[in-house]
Length: 139
Image (cartoon, rainbow, N blue to C red; front, side, top):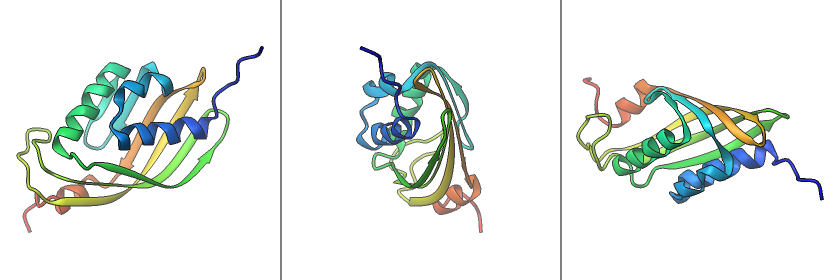
């Protein structure tokens, strides 16, 4: 029986669900060991284990962190997802004490798929807008 290749769009949807459900033990189902994650707040993180550690740190800072996907476009090896990131700053984030403020920013994520798993994610959002909503910028 032939093995079926995972659907790139389905992989990206499952990845968002893993974040939203906070079930990072499932990352190995959709993310390659050598996964690379880049965002305006994290810089570049290499490796699935390091991604999982970052995700857990993010959820300590933003326990209600949520990814809402509005639209996805997918090809054989590339997925683009437009969405919204939201949460409440309840714990230390990147050395910043909690502000107890909420945020909601639009984002775009680009995923590369190879060998039936996500190999890379580049997330794009306005870091200035995020920090402004968290009350971290002076008026």
